[in-house]
Image (tube, rainbow, N blue to C red; front, side, top):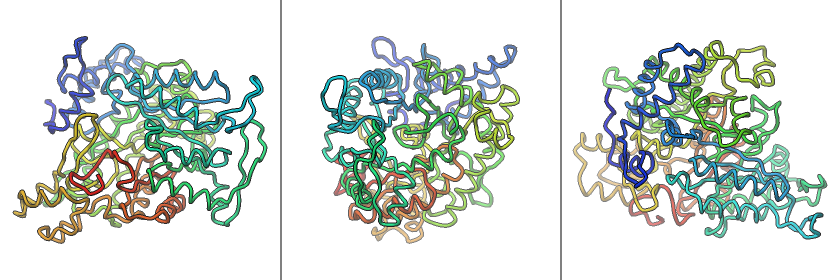
Length: 577
């Protein structure tokens, strides 16, 4: 089976970031050869469990679902599988303890991980606050934010395998004495440029907001209360900072831990850079996403989900991701130990918005929420059944006896988790579909995903529909390229306007409702941006955080367009881009 036709932008991305090069920097493989390399390497894991197994069939299955752009694993797997010391995981959390040795050991580990293509998350909550005592020197501590700048500088220097700029998530608990400095840490947009930051919000804090009360700031070195603040004032601080820069996001850290199936082995304190993968200290996870536009079949001129095909795809994707754990090269023994002890994987989706458009369903509708629930509950159920079957063949994950599954008397699983909704930033470009579960950003937009290239795109479903209606021309293209929304363009019929709602046409509550539906059926977490127009207020952002907590999300990220000078997605001629 030959590789499906790739878009021009997909080929650009593959050549820049994914295809192998020789020592002179010349590309020495084709996209098809890349996928064969990946399929061949990942299929080899089957022999660990049955040395006599013929892996050719598995290799063929893995290759075909990638070649048809039905499924793609996370970028490090595409880049590194089959290479010497191939690091295949995307997500890592590295612990940072309250000592100089631990801090700079974490910097070293981060550099190694970034060099191999992984992203890193950290909680800085254990670090003593600014101006606290340092007994060994008689000096005073500089605080978490100052040390985050050390990580940021190190990340600036090291590109991920020469392919991707390093990415970090910095987390600080809302009850840390330096929380206000942390919240404001990215007011200067030249600072912490390689970090997303999130406040780890507790249930106590959320209750204090509801009751309009104060809450405690606690020195992590001494465990003593050092100050009390009004919870609503801190929520306003977070919201104002996010209004200006998009940071910080919030993590509902107690909910993350309550719903963690391996909570007996310790607390989760941080996530990967995009927030969809909470992890224990030193834990890593590999992700992969199913392209829903390839899971459709036509019935009476209408696109419907092909559940037979989806079943087979989920089964093989779960098999694939479990194999990745065994074929991975781990940069540290601690990372290998806990990753293999939990065998956490994250299967998710991409192309959700395109699938809705093909099916004639607006994103901001009850029908869209219903189909989201149907699809993700189905994927979760099939992936868990597959994990249970793998457990029979290969054994349960080693920490099973310390998991909630054991407490409940089974079922027996190979993997502590199986589902995650990732952002799929670049793999969705390769697949030629919309990213993750996001609505379309605009009908026509530019991706700033390469340092020296701007990739322009027009939604293929809109293009096909506009051509069929006879309205596709240069004047229309010019009009839609200048706007985040098509709602005020007279040449476009109303039914098309109703269908092609963009991220900025959608009220924040619909964004959050959609995130919460997917969260209910995702073992890990969900990467989703609550896009807001430039005219959004600080109160709008406050409301988004409170609504996300109410609807059961594990975290939330808001982005008001124009709040950053450089955006990954932008309208071609938008006023604010």
